[in-house]
Amino acid sequence: MNDKFPPRTRASWAAWLKDDLLAVEVDEATAVAFCGHLADLGVLKREGEDNWRIASPFTESAISIQEQMEQRLNVLGATEQGFALHYFLKPSPNTQKIGESGKPESSKAGDNPESNARLSDRPTSNLSNLQLVKKYGRQVQSFVDLEKSFTDKLLGEHTTLKEARKMFNFILSRMKQKTEPRPWEQLSRRRHK
Image (cartoon, rainbow, N blue to C red; front, side, top):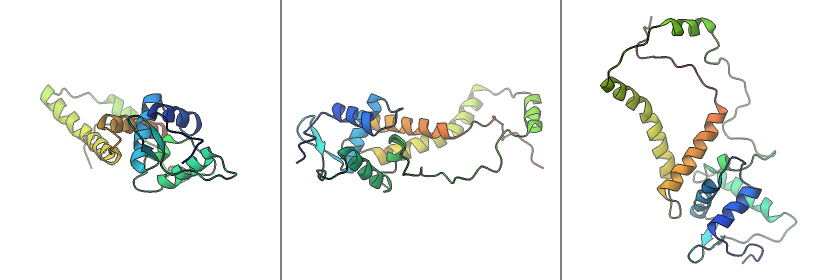
């Protein structure tokens, strides 16, 4: 057993992770949910009612326990089960963010002022309530499917659906920071040549 980390409550583990390993944007409730996900991944294990301990003790070495935990989470983040870990961890200078190619995009939406002017000159359509419900239902369906796929992967013995949704919302907020907004264009009524 590791005497440096005796059993703690889930909230105190969340506070320790938040101080040392998690990104600044992670709030307390998300950090607590993240601890449940760590338990599902085998990093933490439950002992008693609300006592949690590191699943396997760290070695006594020159590397600090914080660095050993960071290395363990980075290794888990490369697995299919740990796909969400890199969204929560502080960026380290050694690791490269997943999904970044390092190449600039060839063209950005909205760069052409002529197309933006044409869009603003168009009259808006007058849709009935039923048409609006159908239209936005189809547009939101992909978001609902994305949320379901993420929450299904995040659910576990120690992670509830509410906590999985909280973590999904945090992941989504991190994804939004990486993308630039596009001007809205109604494609369904656009005439193709």
